[in-house]
Each structure stands twice: as C-alpha cells, then as structure tokens.
Image 1 (tube, one colour):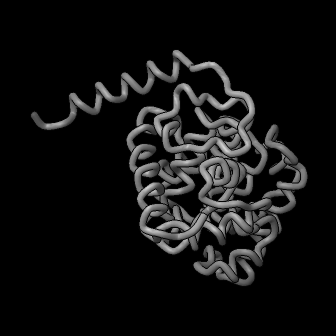
Image 2 (spheres, rainbow, N blue to C red):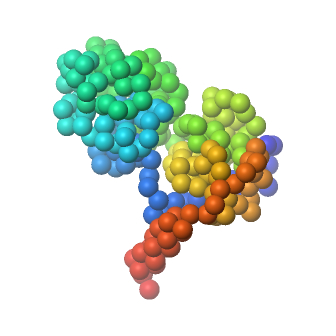
Length: 248
C-alpha cells in the first residue's frame, strides 16, 4: 500500500466505522483488565503474557485469580512456580508461562526497583516479553501515542484490507507505522482485535455482518461465513442504548 492522501482517507474511514461498530461487543481481555485495574502497567503486563494463544475468557479468569493472590512484582516473585501454575491453569502453555512470570517479576524487583519500565528496549529484556506485549503495555499502561500493538488479528486484518503486504507480525508493525497516520496508532489494536474476534475471523469471516465490507478487498479470503443474528442484535441494542444516552 502506498502512502497517499487517498490511502489515508481509506484508513480513516475504516477506523471511524469500526470505532462505532465495536460498541456493544466484548472487548479483548487485556483491555477489560486495564479498565478494571485503573490502567496498572504491571497487571497489564502480566495479563498480556497470559493472553498469548489463549481465549479471552480464560485469560481474564486466570488473571483475576492470580491478582487476588499477588498484585505487585514483589509479592508475585515470592510465589512458588507450582502455585502460579495452579492459579493460571488452564491458559495455554501454563507451565512455561508460570516460569516466565516468576522470572519477569524477579527482574522487575532486582533491576527496576519493582516498577514496570517505560521503554521498549527495557520491556523486551523481561522474560516472556516480546514486541507485542511491550507495545500493549506502552499503549494501555503508559498511554503512549507512539506505538502499534500487532497480534494475529491485527496482522490478518491489515493484510486483508490491503493496508500492508507482509508475512510476519513484526513486518506488519513497521508497515503500519509507514502506512497509517499517527493519530490511529493507539487504537489499531483495540479496533482490529475486537472486530477480528467477532466478525473478521481467521476462517469463514462474517463479511455479511461487516460494516467495512465495501472498503475491504478481502485479500486472501476464499470463503465467507454466515451472518450472526446474535451479533446484529447486540449491535442494534448498543445503538439504541447510545441514542437514549445522547442529549435530545
């Protein structure tokens, strides 16, 4: 995708449509935790590590159990690995993640004084932390306007829309910096992940339910799924509720 005024307008139209369309849909688990925990960088960090290849409901439940037992790097670093395993089960790779969490908290205490660092370079030093996790911590925990968090949904949908032409999420992140306006960067993950979980699914995307279908070239899509009556009801209810809250 070449950067141009026309291309920028397409991105703007899509982002504005999605901003309205995700109302009433379930937010990603880490976004929920961010809201519940007053944007605590540590809890966002831990929840994001847990979320890798794990369904949102499982991530949210596991994070809630773990934070009831330990809410700071110091208290979590003192937990035995087998107790962390028990608390976070059944997230995917829970044994590996338990070791990462313990090691991550130990480094936070010993190297960073018990605080989550504020730079990409320092964040990716932490065990279990890659660019996706670091970017989400920067966006949600530190309100950065300079980062884009790319997960599997963002990577897939950005390519379907033709915003990028990439093979790996790391390539997608760099391409999105070049091909989208800075004002959208903090919102790309929330909008595309929410839409990817509900509508633009990996297989059989629900193009009939998609508010941006007319702006999407459907690159790589060979078969589409059936529309979802539940999704349409939820969105209609959300629109009615929004209209009722609006001043007359």
